[in-house]
Image 1 (tube, one colour):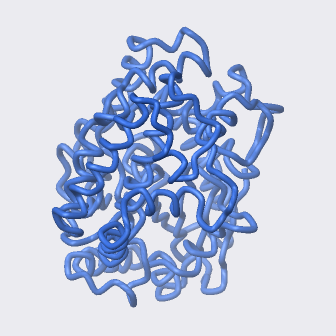
Image 2 (cartoon, one colour):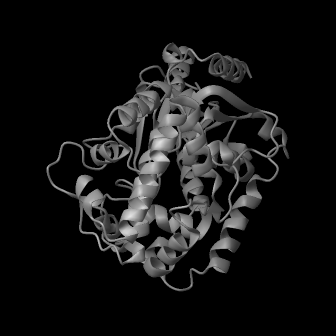
Image 3 (cartoon, one colour):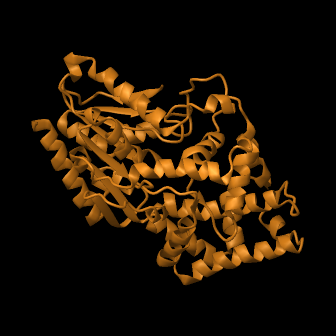
Length: 400
């Protein structure tokens, strides 16, 4: 298990600020998530203010944290959320075993998006190892099909970018679908897409999954300004032109949407995490994002094709219901009262609302995981209120 630490501000027995890694590497030549979480986050601000110790763990199987010889189905049976939380518990115990430095240290556990929902679940399983928690922008309901995700995506696009932008996107999808039905390849040529068989339903749906994900990612990872800028670009040029740019950037090579299916069957220890994430969705998480262009059968067939026919609707649905059971009541213990959960207004994952928890903050005008940023850049009033409340609780931790 790989983990990164920042101990510049630490004073013996100070709070351990622990960020749980999610579905990707924490450190690579192109992505330095640890640098962001340990140096450019509100968690970092708190550690600096209160003499804390910063930790960022890497999720098992992702990045360099490989414990098996390959990613075969037999090896992947150890890729579960409870196993990942057990890793976090083990690492916390490891730190706390150094009684000279951490004997009296409190633990503030933080997660964002996928790792965000681990925070309240961890508090249920390991109440003795967590003193304060913060789960940002995470799904807190789990079911096999999540139609609401893209409903929310298009609603947010219209809210920020305007009806014209929304309508142009819908028109773009409809035009492309009709062109493919009629075997008119001009639209595909215009978008510089290759390696595509229009009579293969899997390839057609996979292409639309790639294209809808472009819009989903725009809403999930960008702020209001960038969403508006994208809508301006779509309005001034065309949705087709926008998609081509997002799929391929400045590359002169064509975009092969079919190639995105290849890593799903690759059992080598590669850096691509698509096989790992699909496995987690097929065995525990569900929430398959469907739309008019991407039906549930696409995901169910993919689970069965990649991992075996045991992965039927009934099998997956049962597993997902077991996961959801952990989030039906998050006010069941005193420990849960010290867990902050946030749901940004401009975030499609807000469709998976917290059902019952007194410390859930609805962040008006905020985007996905925006609340994790440093306090200096957060001017949103609802986020400011949240950060003040968290700061107050951390201060209480120091005095307990």
